[in-house]
Amino acid sequence: MSLRIFIGLFVVILFTQFQIELNLLEVNIPVTGQSLAVLLVAYVLGLKEGTISILLYLIIGLLGVPIFADGGNGVSAFTGNSGGYLIGFLFGGILSGFLSERLKNTFMNSLLAALFGTLVILLFGVTRLAFNLGISDALLYGFNPFVLGGLIKILLGGLLGWLIKKGLTSKG
Image (tube, rainbow, N blue to C red):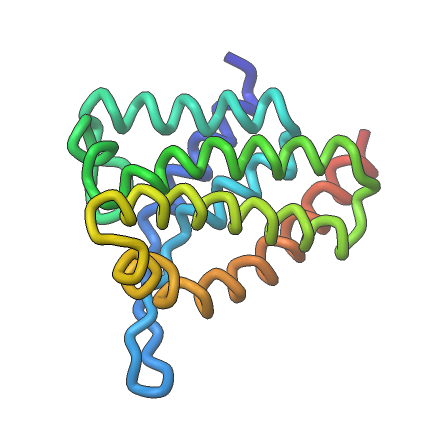
């Protein structure tokens, strides 16, 4: 395994441990570093290395290591309500890595990669929830609470992705 893939895996595991609750307009908004890290790693490392980092993260969690948000792990994490988001991480990361390789590294393109990757993650998550809760409740519990946090992470991820990739490419 290359050092870049290992660092990508480490970043995703590390960022997953960060979780804050924003209380805006009397609404608690959960913000975790998990989706931010997945999309950031994919954007910076590109399609192949980013995808491998994300796959390793998902496999390690599936095997029972408590590395998902709130210490989640195992098959139950994938079959439960968060399972769609976990699968969405892979496909959102693939899209972000793909866009990173196809588009010039600008702040706007990095923002677009973060936006589209986030939309893919939410699509998978809400679709999975809809099977258990129905579409109305899936949107209510699986989309609405994450919009503001998602926007913050898109802006932060877009900025960090652009700057980190710019720094890495200027060094060699």
